[in-house]
Image (cartoon, rainbow, N blue to C red; front, side, top):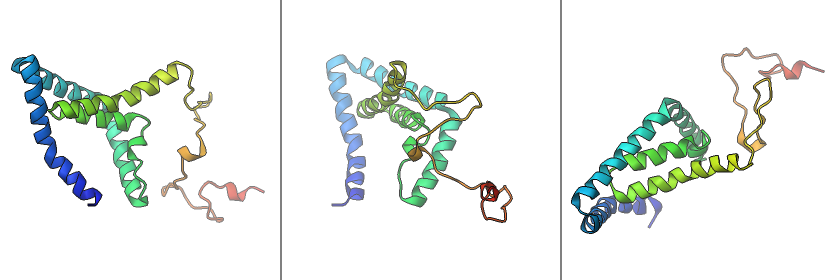
Length: 162
């Protein structure tokens, strides 16, 4: 079986698994508390998505378009941990205990990243002039079509220096 068939099978089985999880939680803790937990998870997911805002979504859209063009599915890393925050918020917003647990696990990744920064792991250094120094694998050159082309074909003009 290929990946698409497994993904489709998983998506079809998810509602049944969510229903079974709800029945199990309701049997242990009661129907009202189980329903309250589902609503609280969905509200928390909505708040996270609202807080993540349009900036993360716009960056994800550009990254996904670029990734699909280059067969490089790195869109979740396009905005640091912003993509993971969006995914975690979406999983929390979908009603169900299984998706809530997956959403919380995804949201732990940005939390661990922030804790690592707080404990001494340094983020990319930003100089006083506002320039951020990145590792070579964290950036790529994109020509701006609005800039005029120089005679050397180099849009930055660096080819003119000797």
